[in-house]
Amino acid sequence: MAQFEVPAIVPADPEANVADLLVERVRLTPDLALFGVPEGDGWRNVSAKDFETAVIALAKGFVAAGVQPGEKIGFIARTTYEWTLIDFALFYAGAVMVPIYETSSPSQIQWIMEDSGATALIVESAEHFTRADEVRGDLPLVREIWQLHLGAIDALTAQGAEVEDAEIERRRQIANGSDIATLIYTSGSTGRPKGCVLTHSNFVELSRNSAKALDAVVSAPGASTLLFLTTAHVFARFISILAVHSGVRTGHQPDTKQLLPALGSFKPTFLLAVPRVFEKVYNSAEQKAEAGGKGKIFRAAAAAAVEHSKLLEEGKKVPLGLRLKFALFDKLVYAKLREAMGGNVSYAVSGSAPLGSRLGHFFHSLGVVILEGYGLTETTAPATVNLAHKSKIGTVGPALPGVGVRLADDGEIEVKGINVFKEYWNNPEATAASFDDGWFRTGDLGSFDAEGFLTITGRKKEIIVTAGGKNVAPAALEDPIRSNPIVGQVVVLGDQKPFISALITLDSEMLPTWLANNGLPAEMSLAEASHNAAVRDEVQRAIDRANKTVSRAESIRKFTILGSEWTEASGHLTPKMSIKRNVILQDFAGEIAEIYDEPVQTTTTPLG
Image (cartoon, rainbow, N blue to C red; front, side):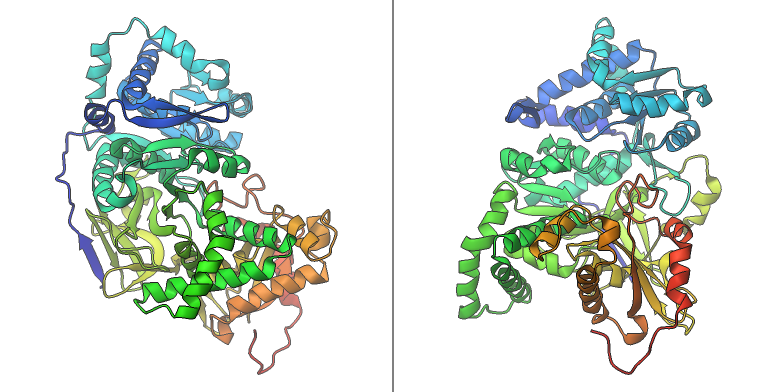
Protein backbone atom coordinates (compact mmCIF):
# COMPACT_ATOMS: atom_id res chain seq x y z
CA MET A 1 0.00 0.00 0.00
CA ALA A 2 1.56 3.30 -1.15
CA GLN A 3 1.47 5.89 1.63
CA PHE A 4 2.92 9.36 2.16
CA GLU A 5 2.55 11.37 5.37
CA VAL A 6 3.93 14.88 5.91
CA PRO A 7 4.45 16.00 9.52
CA ALA A 8 2.77 19.22 10.64
CA ILE A 9 5.04 22.28 10.56
CA VAL A 10 3.13 24.24 13.20
CA PRO A 11 2.55 22.70 16.66
CA ALA A 12 -1.12 21.94 17.23
CA ASP A 13 -3.12 24.16 19.56
CA PRO A 14 -6.21 22.16 20.64
CA GLU A 15 -7.71 25.20 22.39
CA ALA A 16 -7.63 27.52 19.37
CA ASN A 17 -10.71 28.37 17.31
CA VAL A 18 -11.24 30.21 14.01
CA ALA A 19 -11.95 33.53 15.75
CA ASP A 20 -8.44 33.39 17.23
CA LEU A 21 -7.02 33.72 13.70
CA LEU A 22 -8.58 37.17 13.32
CA VAL A 23 -7.56 38.21 16.85
CA GLU A 24 -3.96 37.27 16.04
CA ARG A 25 -4.05 39.07 12.67
CA VAL A 26 -5.27 42.29 14.34
CA ARG A 27 -2.56 41.99 17.00
CA LEU A 28 0.17 41.58 14.37
CA THR A 29 -0.98 44.07 11.70
CA PRO A 30 -3.98 46.17 12.81
CA ASP A 31 -3.62 48.66 9.96
CA LEU A 32 -3.02 46.12 7.18
CA ALA A 33 -5.63 46.26 4.40
CA LEU A 34 -7.39 42.94 4.84
CA PHE A 35 -10.20 43.53 2.33
CA GLY A 36 -10.94 45.61 -0.72
CA VAL A 37 -14.61 46.56 -1.04
CA PRO A 38 -15.97 47.74 -4.43
CA GLU A 39 -16.49 51.52 -4.48
CA GLY A 40 -17.17 53.33 -7.72
CA ASP A 41 -14.60 52.17 -10.26
CA GLY A 42 -12.13 51.19 -7.55
CA TRP A 43 -11.79 49.49 -4.18
CA ARG A 44 -12.02 50.84 -0.65
CA ASN A 45 -9.62 49.19 1.78
CA VAL A 46 -10.80 47.74 5.10
CA SER A 47 -8.03 47.28 7.68
CA ALA A 48 -7.77 44.26 9.94
CA LYS A 49 -8.76 46.36 12.95
CA ASP A 50 -11.73 47.97 11.18
CA PHE A 51 -12.90 44.54 10.02
CA GLU A 52 -12.79 43.15 13.56
CA THR A 53 -14.67 46.21 14.83
CA ALA A 54 -17.43 45.53 12.30
CA VAL A 55 -17.39 41.81 13.18
CA ILE A 56 -17.84 42.53 16.91
CA ALA A 57 -20.65 45.03 16.25
CA LEU A 58 -22.54 42.50 14.12
CA ALA A 59 -21.87 39.70 16.61
CA LYS A 60 -23.53 41.90 19.27
CA GLY A 61 -26.53 42.17 16.98
CA PHE A 62 -26.83 38.39 16.74
CA VAL A 63 -26.60 38.16 20.54
CA ALA A 64 -29.29 40.82 20.98
CA ALA A 65 -31.49 38.94 18.49
CA GLY A 66 -31.35 35.86 20.71
CA VAL A 67 -28.75 33.74 18.91
CA GLN A 68 -27.26 31.33 21.46
CA PRO A 69 -23.78 29.70 21.49
CA GLY A 70 -23.84 26.50 19.43
CA GLU A 71 -26.99 27.45 17.50
CA LYS A 72 -26.92 26.80 13.79
CA ILE A 73 -27.71 29.66 11.42
CA GLY A 74 -28.38 29.09 7.71
CA PHE A 75 -26.86 31.53 5.20
CA ILE A 76 -27.65 32.04 1.51
CA ALA A 77 -25.69 34.70 -0.35
CA ARG A 78 -23.32 35.37 -3.21
CA THR A 79 -19.57 35.84 -2.77
CA THR A 80 -19.16 39.30 -1.24
CA TYR A 81 -17.32 41.06 1.58
CA GLU A 82 -20.47 40.70 3.70
CA TRP A 83 -20.21 36.92 3.43
CA THR A 84 -16.93 36.80 5.38
CA LEU A 85 -18.12 39.58 7.72
CA ILE A 86 -21.12 37.44 8.72
CA ASP A 87 -18.97 34.31 8.89
CA PHE A 88 -16.67 35.83 11.51
CA ALA A 89 -19.50 37.60 13.34
CA LEU A 90 -21.15 34.21 13.87
CA PHE A 91 -17.83 32.79 15.10
CA TYR A 92 -17.52 35.68 17.56
CA ALA A 93 -21.12 35.15 18.71
CA GLY A 94 -20.38 31.47 19.30
CA ALA A 95 -22.82 30.30 16.62
CA VAL A 96 -22.37 27.76 13.81
CA MET A 97 -22.95 28.76 10.19
CA VAL A 98 -24.69 26.38 7.80
CA PRO A 99 -23.91 27.75 4.30
CA ILE A 100 -26.42 27.06 1.53
CA TYR A 101 -25.62 27.56 -2.15
CA GLU A 102 -27.32 30.68 -3.45
CA THR A 103 -28.74 28.68 -6.37
CA SER A 104 -30.40 26.09 -4.10
CA SER A 105 -34.04 25.22 -4.71
CA PRO A 106 -36.73 25.53 -2.01
CA SER A 107 -36.63 21.76 -1.39
CA GLN A 108 -32.84 21.84 -1.00
CA ILE A 109 -33.08 24.77 1.41
CA GLN A 110 -35.73 22.90 3.39
CA TRP A 111 -33.62 19.73 3.62
CA ILE A 112 -30.48 21.51 4.82
CA MET A 113 -32.29 23.74 7.33
CA GLU A 114 -34.36 20.83 8.62
CA ASP A 115 -31.52 18.29 8.81
CA SER A 116 -29.12 20.74 10.48
CA GLY A 117 -31.66 21.98 13.00
CA ALA A 118 -30.92 25.61 12.09
CA THR A 119 -32.96 28.14 14.06
CA ALA A 120 -32.55 31.20 11.81
CA LEU A 121 -31.68 32.04 8.23
CA ILE A 122 -29.78 34.91 6.62
CA VAL A 123 -30.50 35.56 2.93
CA GLU A 124 -29.02 38.16 0.61
CA SER A 125 -31.84 39.06 -1.76
CA ALA A 126 -35.59 39.07 -2.25
CA GLU A 127 -35.20 36.12 -4.62
CA HIS A 128 -33.46 34.09 -1.92
CA PHE A 129 -36.15 35.12 0.56
CA THR A 130 -38.92 33.98 -1.79
CA ARG A 131 -37.39 30.52 -2.14
CA ALA A 132 -36.88 30.21 1.61
CA ASP A 133 -40.34 31.57 2.40
CA GLU A 134 -41.89 28.89 0.18
CA VAL A 135 -40.84 26.23 2.72
CA ARG A 136 -40.92 28.39 5.87
CA GLY A 137 -44.10 26.65 7.03
CA ASP A 138 -42.27 23.31 7.07
CA LEU A 139 -39.45 24.67 9.26
CA PRO A 140 -40.92 25.17 12.73
CA LEU A 141 -37.47 25.69 14.31
CA VAL A 142 -36.76 28.77 12.19
CA ARG A 143 -37.78 31.83 14.17
CA GLU A 144 -36.17 34.55 12.02
CA ILE A 145 -35.15 35.27 8.42
CA TRP A 146 -32.86 38.28 7.91
CA GLN A 147 -32.46 39.81 4.44
CA LEU A 148 -29.24 41.68 3.63
CA HIS A 149 -30.76 43.74 0.82
CA LEU A 150 -33.26 45.13 3.33
CA GLY A 151 -30.48 46.42 5.60
CA ALA A 152 -30.20 43.46 7.98
CA ILE A 153 -26.55 44.15 8.87
CA ASP A 154 -27.21 47.78 9.84
CA ALA A 155 -30.35 46.79 11.74
CA LEU A 156 -28.59 44.02 13.68
CA THR A 157 -25.64 46.30 14.42
CA ALA A 158 -27.99 48.92 15.86
CA GLN A 159 -29.90 46.28 17.80
CA GLY A 160 -26.71 45.08 19.50
CA ALA A 161 -25.44 48.50 20.56
CA GLU A 162 -26.10 47.79 24.25
CA VAL A 163 -24.41 44.37 24.34
CA GLU A 164 -21.17 44.45 26.33
CA ASP A 165 -17.80 43.75 24.72
CA ALA A 166 -17.14 41.25 27.51
CA GLU A 167 -20.08 39.11 26.38
CA ILE A 168 -18.70 38.84 22.86
CA GLU A 169 -15.24 38.00 24.20
CA ARG A 170 -16.78 35.30 26.43
CA ARG A 171 -18.68 33.77 23.55
CA ARG A 172 -15.71 34.03 21.19
CA GLN A 173 -13.65 31.84 23.49
CA ILE A 174 -16.25 29.15 24.23
CA ALA A 175 -15.36 26.84 21.33
CA ASN A 176 -12.16 24.85 21.33
CA GLY A 177 -10.48 22.95 18.53
CA SER A 178 -12.64 19.83 18.68
CA ASP A 179 -15.92 21.75 18.54
CA ILE A 180 -17.97 22.17 15.38
CA ALA A 181 -17.03 25.30 13.41
CA THR A 182 -19.43 24.88 10.51
CA LEU A 183 -21.77 22.37 8.95
CA ILE A 184 -21.21 22.19 5.19
CA TYR A 185 -23.43 19.99 3.07
CA THR A 186 -21.95 18.06 0.17
CA SER A 187 -23.05 19.13 -3.30
CA GLY A 188 -25.20 16.04 -3.75
CA SER A 189 -23.66 14.75 -7.00
CA THR A 190 -24.30 11.15 -5.89
CA GLY A 191 -27.50 11.56 -3.86
CA ARG A 192 -29.00 13.61 -1.04
CA PRO A 193 -26.48 16.10 0.46
CA LYS A 194 -24.80 15.00 3.69
CA GLY A 195 -23.77 17.47 6.38
CA CYS A 196 -20.02 17.46 7.04
CA VAL A 197 -19.05 18.46 10.57
CA LEU A 198 -15.87 20.54 10.20
CA THR A 199 -14.19 21.52 13.45
CA HIS A 200 -12.32 24.64 14.49
CA SER A 201 -9.09 22.63 14.47
CA ASN A 202 -9.76 21.56 10.86
CA PHE A 203 -9.63 25.22 9.80
CA VAL A 204 -7.06 26.51 12.32
CA GLU A 205 -4.43 23.79 11.91
CA LEU A 206 -4.89 23.55 8.14
CA SER A 207 -4.65 27.34 7.75
CA ARG A 208 -1.52 27.59 9.89
CA ASN A 209 0.24 24.72 8.13
CA SER A 210 -0.90 25.67 4.62
CA ALA A 211 0.35 29.23 5.18
CA LYS A 212 3.83 27.81 5.79
CA ALA A 213 3.66 25.41 2.84
CA LEU A 214 2.36 28.15 0.51
CA ASP A 215 4.49 30.91 2.00
CA ALA A 216 5.53 32.32 -1.38
CA VAL A 217 1.87 32.65 -2.39
CA VAL A 218 0.09 34.00 0.70
CA SER A 219 2.92 35.71 2.58
CA ALA A 220 4.58 37.61 -0.25
CA PRO A 221 4.58 41.42 0.28
CA GLY A 222 1.31 42.83 -1.01
CA ALA A 223 -0.30 39.40 -1.45
CA SER A 224 -3.89 39.74 -2.64
CA THR A 225 -6.63 37.65 -4.18
CA LEU A 226 -9.97 38.23 -5.84
CA LEU A 227 -12.57 35.62 -4.86
CA PHE A 228 -15.29 34.81 -7.35
CA LEU A 229 -16.04 31.16 -6.54
CA THR A 230 -18.97 30.72 -4.20
CA THR A 231 -17.88 31.01 -0.56
CA ALA A 232 -20.59 28.51 0.35
CA HIS A 233 -18.20 25.91 -1.08
CA VAL A 234 -15.49 24.65 1.25
CA PHE A 235 -12.72 25.52 -1.25
CA ALA A 236 -13.39 29.29 -1.27
CA ARG A 237 -14.42 29.25 2.41
CA PHE A 238 -11.06 27.80 3.43
CA ILE A 239 -9.14 30.27 1.27
CA SER A 240 -11.08 33.20 2.80
CA ILE A 241 -10.11 32.03 6.31
CA LEU A 242 -6.53 31.34 5.23
CA ALA A 243 -6.40 34.90 3.82
CA VAL A 244 -7.43 36.38 7.18
CA HIS A 245 -4.79 34.29 8.95
CA SER A 246 -2.08 35.22 6.43
CA GLY A 247 -2.98 38.88 5.97
CA VAL A 248 -3.92 38.55 2.30
CA ARG A 249 -5.93 41.48 0.93
CA THR A 250 -9.14 39.96 -0.43
CA GLY A 251 -11.67 41.32 -2.88
CA HIS A 252 -14.90 39.70 -4.10
CA GLN A 253 -16.67 39.60 -7.46
CA PRO A 254 -19.84 37.47 -7.49
CA ASP A 255 -20.67 38.24 -11.13
CA THR A 256 -18.26 36.28 -13.32
CA LYS A 257 -19.35 38.37 -16.34
CA GLN A 258 -17.64 41.31 -14.59
CA LEU A 259 -14.56 39.27 -13.68
CA LEU A 260 -12.14 40.74 -16.22
CA PRO A 261 -12.85 44.40 -15.30
CA ALA A 262 -12.57 43.45 -11.61
CA LEU A 263 -9.23 41.71 -12.18
CA GLY A 264 -8.01 44.77 -14.05
CA SER A 265 -8.80 47.14 -11.20
CA PHE A 266 -8.04 44.90 -8.20
CA LYS A 267 -4.82 43.44 -9.65
CA PRO A 268 -4.54 40.30 -7.47
CA THR A 269 -1.27 38.41 -7.00
CA PHE A 270 -2.95 35.00 -6.93
CA LEU A 271 -6.27 33.50 -7.92
CA LEU A 272 -8.47 30.66 -6.79
CA ALA A 273 -10.32 28.96 -9.62
CA VAL A 274 -11.66 25.73 -11.04
CA PRO A 275 -10.28 24.33 -14.33
CA ARG A 276 -13.33 25.54 -16.27
CA VAL A 277 -12.26 29.14 -15.58
CA PHE A 278 -8.81 28.55 -17.09
CA GLU A 279 -10.42 26.81 -20.08
CA LYS A 280 -12.71 29.83 -20.58
CA VAL A 281 -9.78 32.29 -20.42
CA TYR A 282 -7.85 30.27 -22.99
CA ASN A 283 -10.81 29.60 -25.31
CA SER A 284 -12.01 33.22 -25.18
CA ALA A 285 -8.53 34.48 -26.06
CA GLU A 286 -8.27 31.99 -28.92
CA GLN A 287 -11.66 32.89 -30.39
CA LYS A 288 -10.97 36.63 -29.99
CA ALA A 289 -7.70 36.16 -31.90
CA GLU A 290 -9.56 34.14 -34.54
CA ALA A 291 -12.13 36.93 -34.96
CA GLY A 292 -9.30 39.42 -35.48
CA GLY A 293 -7.62 37.25 -38.10
CA LYS A 294 -4.84 36.26 -35.70
CA GLY A 295 -5.95 32.75 -34.82
CA LYS A 296 -2.92 31.16 -36.46
CA ILE A 297 -0.58 33.42 -34.43
CA PHE A 298 -2.39 32.56 -31.18
CA ARG A 299 -2.19 28.80 -31.80
CA ALA A 300 1.49 29.06 -32.67
CA ALA A 301 2.05 31.07 -29.48
CA ALA A 302 0.16 28.46 -27.43
CA ALA A 303 2.20 25.62 -28.92
CA ALA A 304 5.44 27.48 -28.19
CA ALA A 305 4.30 28.19 -24.63
CA VAL A 306 3.55 24.53 -23.94
CA GLU A 307 6.83 23.35 -25.49
CA HIS A 308 8.80 26.00 -23.57
CA SER A 309 7.20 25.05 -20.25
CA LYS A 310 7.75 21.31 -20.76
CA LEU A 311 11.46 21.83 -21.43
CA LEU A 312 11.83 24.00 -18.33
CA GLU A 313 10.00 21.48 -16.13
CA GLU A 314 12.20 18.67 -17.43
CA GLY A 315 15.30 20.74 -16.70
CA LYS A 316 16.32 20.76 -20.36
CA LYS A 317 17.92 23.60 -22.27
CA VAL A 318 15.55 25.68 -24.38
CA PRO A 319 16.90 25.88 -27.96
CA LEU A 320 17.79 29.35 -29.27
CA GLY A 321 15.07 29.21 -31.94
CA LEU A 322 12.37 28.52 -29.36
CA ARG A 323 13.77 31.21 -27.04
CA LEU A 324 13.51 33.80 -29.82
CA LYS A 325 10.03 32.64 -30.80
CA PHE A 326 8.97 32.70 -27.15
CA ALA A 327 10.26 36.26 -26.69
CA LEU A 328 8.30 37.41 -29.74
CA PHE A 329 5.08 35.74 -28.60
CA ASP A 330 5.58 37.15 -25.12
CA LYS A 331 5.12 40.64 -26.57
CA LEU A 332 2.38 39.73 -29.04
CA VAL A 333 0.25 37.35 -26.96
CA TYR A 334 1.36 36.42 -23.43
CA ALA A 335 1.73 39.99 -22.12
CA LYS A 336 -1.83 40.84 -23.20
CA LEU A 337 -3.24 37.83 -21.36
CA ARG A 338 -1.27 38.70 -18.23
CA GLU A 339 -2.64 42.24 -18.41
CA ALA A 340 -6.18 40.90 -18.81
CA MET A 341 -5.75 39.08 -15.48
CA GLY A 342 -4.64 42.30 -13.79
CA GLY A 343 -0.93 42.14 -14.56
CA ASN A 344 0.19 40.90 -11.14
CA VAL A 345 -1.01 37.28 -11.01
CA SER A 346 1.91 34.95 -10.31
CA TYR A 347 0.04 31.95 -8.92
CA ALA A 348 -3.34 30.34 -9.28
CA VAL A 349 -4.69 27.61 -7.04
CA SER A 350 -6.88 25.17 -8.97
CA GLY A 351 -9.12 22.46 -7.61
CA SER A 352 -12.45 20.58 -7.70
CA ALA A 353 -11.68 18.92 -11.07
CA PRO A 354 -8.59 17.83 -13.04
CA LEU A 355 -6.72 20.49 -15.00
CA GLY A 356 -5.25 19.31 -18.30
CA SER A 357 -1.46 19.47 -18.56
CA ARG A 358 -1.73 21.54 -21.76
CA LEU A 359 -3.40 24.38 -19.86
CA GLY A 360 -0.98 24.02 -16.97
CA HIS A 361 2.01 24.42 -19.30
CA PHE A 362 0.36 27.26 -21.23
CA PHE A 363 -0.26 29.39 -18.14
CA HIS A 364 3.14 28.48 -16.72
CA SER A 365 4.76 30.11 -19.74
CA LEU A 366 2.59 33.18 -19.15
CA GLY A 367 4.29 33.48 -15.77
CA VAL A 368 1.31 32.09 -13.86
CA VAL A 369 2.15 28.95 -11.90
CA ILE A 370 -1.04 26.93 -11.47
CA LEU A 371 -0.84 25.05 -8.19
CA GLU A 372 -3.30 22.25 -8.75
CA GLY A 373 -4.60 20.61 -5.59
CA TYR A 374 -7.01 17.94 -4.44
CA GLY A 375 -9.55 17.65 -1.67
CA LEU A 376 -13.19 17.31 -0.72
CA THR A 377 -15.66 18.90 1.67
CA GLU A 378 -14.73 16.13 4.09
CA THR A 379 -11.07 17.21 4.01
CA THR A 380 -11.78 20.94 4.59
CA ALA A 381 -10.78 21.45 0.92
CA PRO A 382 -7.07 20.72 0.30
CA ALA A 383 -5.39 17.43 1.17
CA THR A 384 -2.65 17.79 -1.43
CA VAL A 385 -1.39 20.76 -3.43
CA ASN A 386 1.55 21.61 -5.64
CA LEU A 387 3.99 23.98 -3.97
CA ALA A 388 5.42 27.24 -5.27
CA HIS A 389 9.00 25.97 -5.00
CA LYS A 390 8.19 22.54 -6.43
CA SER A 391 5.25 21.65 -8.62
CA LYS A 392 4.59 19.03 -11.27
CA ILE A 393 2.06 19.86 -13.94
CA GLY A 394 -0.47 17.07 -14.36
CA THR A 395 -0.36 16.12 -10.68
CA VAL A 396 -2.27 17.49 -7.68
CA GLY A 397 0.92 17.73 -5.64
CA PRO A 398 2.11 16.14 -2.41
CA ALA A 399 0.25 15.94 0.91
CA LEU A 400 0.07 19.17 2.88
CA PRO A 401 1.85 19.34 6.25
CA GLY A 402 -0.16 17.48 8.87
CA VAL A 403 -1.84 15.28 6.25
CA GLY A 404 -1.34 11.67 5.21
CA VAL A 405 -2.47 10.19 1.91
CA ARG A 406 -2.44 6.53 0.96
CA LEU A 407 -3.79 4.26 -1.77
CA ALA A 408 -5.87 1.22 -0.93
CA ASP A 409 -5.27 -2.02 -2.80
CA ASP A 410 -7.79 -1.03 -5.47
CA GLY A 411 -6.19 2.41 -5.92
CA GLU A 412 -8.73 4.38 -3.85
CA ILE A 413 -7.28 7.52 -2.25
CA GLU A 414 -7.57 7.62 1.53
CA VAL A 415 -6.76 10.65 3.71
CA LYS A 416 -5.91 11.11 7.37
CA GLY A 417 -4.80 14.19 9.31
CA ILE A 418 -5.57 17.68 10.59
CA ASN A 419 -8.00 18.42 7.73
CA VAL A 420 -10.30 15.39 7.93
CA PHE A 421 -13.84 16.10 9.12
CA LYS A 422 -15.28 14.80 12.37
CA GLU A 423 -18.41 13.04 11.10
CA TYR A 424 -21.51 13.27 8.93
CA TRP A 425 -24.24 15.11 10.82
CA ASN A 426 -26.94 12.77 12.17
CA ASN A 427 -25.60 9.94 10.02
CA PRO A 428 -23.42 7.48 11.97
CA GLU A 429 -23.88 4.76 9.35
CA ALA A 430 -22.47 6.94 6.56
CA THR A 431 -19.65 8.06 8.87
CA ALA A 432 -18.65 4.50 9.70
CA ALA A 433 -18.77 3.45 6.04
CA SER A 434 -16.50 6.35 5.06
CA PHE A 435 -13.53 5.36 7.20
CA ASP A 436 -11.02 2.54 6.91
CA ASP A 437 -9.09 2.16 10.15
CA GLY A 438 -9.18 5.93 10.73
CA TRP A 439 -8.48 6.85 7.09
CA PHE A 440 -11.20 8.66 5.13
CA ARG A 441 -12.22 6.87 1.95
CA THR A 442 -12.49 9.55 -0.75
CA GLY A 443 -14.04 7.43 -3.50
CA ASP A 444 -11.42 8.78 -5.92
CA LEU A 445 -8.69 6.74 -7.59
CA GLY A 446 -5.09 7.87 -7.89
CA SER A 447 -1.43 7.03 -8.24
CA PHE A 448 1.81 8.33 -6.71
CA ASP A 449 5.17 9.05 -8.24
CA ALA A 450 8.36 8.31 -6.33
CA GLU A 451 8.27 11.71 -4.57
CA GLY A 452 4.69 11.39 -3.36
CA PHE A 453 3.07 13.63 -5.96
CA LEU A 454 -0.50 12.42 -6.44
CA THR A 455 -2.27 12.05 -9.79
CA ILE A 456 -6.05 11.57 -9.92
CA THR A 457 -6.98 8.78 -12.31
CA GLY A 458 -10.74 8.60 -11.85
CA ARG A 459 -13.75 8.25 -9.60
CA LYS A 460 -14.26 4.77 -8.14
CA LYS A 461 -18.04 4.75 -8.63
CA GLU A 462 -17.72 6.10 -12.17
CA ILE A 463 -15.46 3.40 -13.61
CA ILE A 464 -17.14 1.96 -16.69
CA VAL A 465 -16.86 -1.77 -17.37
CA THR A 466 -17.78 -2.53 -20.98
CA ALA A 467 -19.50 -5.72 -22.09
CA GLY A 468 -16.06 -6.91 -23.17
CA GLY A 469 -14.72 -6.45 -19.63
CA LYS A 470 -12.62 -3.35 -20.32
CA ASN A 471 -12.33 -0.87 -17.42
CA VAL A 472 -12.61 2.75 -18.58
CA ALA A 473 -12.15 5.92 -16.46
CA PRO A 474 -14.52 8.51 -17.98
CA ALA A 475 -12.49 11.53 -16.82
CA ALA A 476 -9.54 10.54 -19.04
CA LEU A 477 -11.76 11.16 -22.07
CA GLU A 478 -14.12 13.83 -20.73
CA ASP A 479 -11.49 16.35 -19.58
CA PRO A 480 -9.69 16.79 -22.94
CA ILE A 481 -12.98 16.92 -24.87
CA ARG A 482 -14.35 19.59 -22.50
CA SER A 483 -11.36 21.81 -23.27
CA ASN A 484 -12.73 22.43 -26.77
CA PRO A 485 -14.23 25.95 -26.97
CA ILE A 486 -17.71 24.89 -28.12
CA VAL A 487 -18.09 21.92 -25.76
CA GLY A 488 -19.98 22.63 -22.56
CA GLN A 489 -20.12 19.28 -20.77
CA VAL A 490 -19.42 15.64 -21.57
CA VAL A 491 -20.61 12.35 -20.11
CA VAL A 492 -18.87 9.21 -21.34
CA LEU A 493 -21.08 6.10 -21.47
CA GLY A 494 -20.61 2.37 -21.97
CA ASP A 495 -21.16 0.46 -18.74
CA GLN A 496 -22.04 -3.14 -19.78
CA LYS A 497 -22.31 -1.91 -23.37
CA PRO A 498 -20.40 -3.16 -26.44
CA PHE A 499 -18.53 0.14 -26.97
CA ILE A 500 -17.85 3.56 -25.45
CA SER A 501 -20.01 6.54 -26.44
CA ALA A 502 -20.67 10.06 -25.19
CA LEU A 503 -23.37 12.66 -24.61
CA ILE A 504 -22.17 16.19 -25.45
CA THR A 505 -23.63 19.60 -24.66
CA LEU A 506 -22.56 22.85 -26.32
CA ASP A 507 -21.23 25.95 -24.54
CA SER A 508 -23.83 28.69 -25.09
CA GLU A 509 -21.32 31.47 -24.22
CA MET A 510 -18.57 30.39 -26.63
CA LEU A 511 -20.73 28.98 -29.44
CA PRO A 512 -21.83 32.32 -31.04
CA THR A 513 -18.23 33.54 -31.36
CA TRP A 514 -17.09 30.21 -32.81
CA LEU A 515 -19.99 30.19 -35.29
CA ALA A 516 -19.21 33.73 -36.45
CA ASN A 517 -15.51 32.89 -36.80
CA ASN A 518 -16.45 29.93 -38.99
CA GLY A 519 -18.82 31.82 -41.29
CA LEU A 520 -22.01 30.52 -39.68
CA PRO A 521 -24.96 32.45 -38.19
CA ALA A 522 -23.98 33.50 -34.67
CA GLU A 523 -27.62 33.49 -33.57
CA MET A 524 -28.00 29.75 -34.26
CA SER A 525 -29.79 28.03 -31.36
CA LEU A 526 -28.27 25.15 -29.41
CA ALA A 527 -30.82 22.80 -30.93
CA GLU A 528 -29.94 23.93 -34.47
CA ALA A 529 -26.22 23.81 -33.77
CA SER A 530 -26.48 20.26 -32.42
CA HIS A 531 -27.40 19.08 -35.95
CA ASN A 532 -25.05 21.40 -37.85
CA ALA A 533 -22.40 19.54 -39.87
CA ALA A 534 -19.58 22.00 -39.06
CA VAL A 535 -20.36 21.85 -35.34
CA ARG A 536 -20.43 18.04 -35.43
CA ASP A 537 -17.09 18.02 -37.26
CA GLU A 538 -15.56 20.26 -34.58
CA VAL A 539 -16.83 18.00 -31.81
CA GLN A 540 -15.57 14.97 -33.73
CA ARG A 541 -12.10 16.54 -33.86
CA ALA A 542 -12.18 17.03 -30.09
CA ILE A 543 -13.18 13.39 -29.63
CA ASP A 544 -10.48 12.21 -32.05
CA ARG A 545 -7.84 14.07 -30.01
CA ALA A 546 -9.10 12.46 -26.80
CA ASN A 547 -9.21 9.03 -28.42
CA LYS A 548 -5.51 9.27 -29.27
CA THR A 549 -4.72 9.15 -25.54
CA VAL A 550 -6.43 5.78 -24.92
CA SER A 551 -6.58 2.30 -26.41
CA ARG A 552 -9.09 1.45 -29.15
CA ALA A 553 -11.25 -0.50 -26.69
CA GLU A 554 -11.48 2.66 -24.52
CA SER A 555 -12.12 5.10 -27.37
CA ILE A 556 -15.43 6.83 -28.08
CA ARG A 557 -17.12 5.25 -31.09
CA LYS A 558 -20.36 7.26 -31.22
CA PHE A 559 -21.64 10.49 -29.74
CA THR A 560 -24.82 12.55 -29.52
CA ILE A 561 -24.88 16.36 -29.25
CA LEU A 562 -27.84 17.47 -27.16
CA GLY A 563 -29.89 20.53 -28.08
CA SER A 564 -29.90 21.86 -24.51
CA GLU A 565 -27.43 22.68 -21.76
CA TRP A 566 -26.83 20.96 -18.42
CA THR A 567 -27.02 23.53 -15.68
CA GLU A 568 -27.50 23.66 -11.96
CA ALA A 569 -31.02 24.94 -12.57
CA SER A 570 -31.80 21.93 -14.80
CA GLY A 571 -30.64 19.65 -12.00
CA HIS A 572 -27.73 18.19 -13.95
CA LEU A 573 -24.82 20.09 -12.36
CA THR A 574 -23.82 20.65 -8.76
CA PRO A 575 -23.10 24.21 -7.53
CA LYS A 576 -19.39 23.65 -8.23
CA MET A 577 -20.31 22.66 -11.82
CA SER A 578 -19.65 18.93 -11.42
CA ILE A 579 -21.94 16.69 -13.45
CA LYS A 580 -24.64 14.67 -11.69
CA ARG A 581 -23.92 11.53 -13.68
CA ASN A 582 -26.73 9.42 -12.24
CA VAL A 583 -29.35 12.13 -12.95
CA ILE A 584 -28.09 12.57 -16.52
CA LEU A 585 -28.18 8.83 -17.20
CA GLN A 586 -31.77 8.76 -15.99
CA ASP A 587 -33.01 11.91 -17.73
CA PHE A 588 -31.40 11.08 -21.09
CA ALA A 589 -32.08 7.35 -21.12
CA GLY A 590 -33.89 7.71 -24.44
CA GLU A 591 -30.96 9.40 -26.17
CA ILE A 592 -28.60 6.79 -24.73
CA ALA A 593 -30.80 3.96 -25.97
CA GLU A 594 -30.71 5.45 -29.48
CA ILE A 595 -26.90 5.42 -29.46
CA TYR A 596 -26.82 1.69 -28.84
CA ASP A 597 -29.86 0.73 -30.95
CA GLU A 598 -27.86 1.08 -34.17
CA PRO A 599 -24.75 -1.11 -34.42
CA VAL A 600 -21.53 0.79 -34.97
CA GLN A 601 -19.44 -0.06 -38.02
CA THR A 602 -16.16 -1.63 -36.88
CA THR A 603 -12.91 -1.63 -38.83
CA THR A 604 -9.25 -2.22 -38.07
CA THR A 605 -8.46 1.45 -38.74
CA PRO A 606 -7.47 3.32 -35.54
CA LEU A 607 -9.60 6.33 -34.64
CA GLY A 608 -7.99 9.75 -34.85
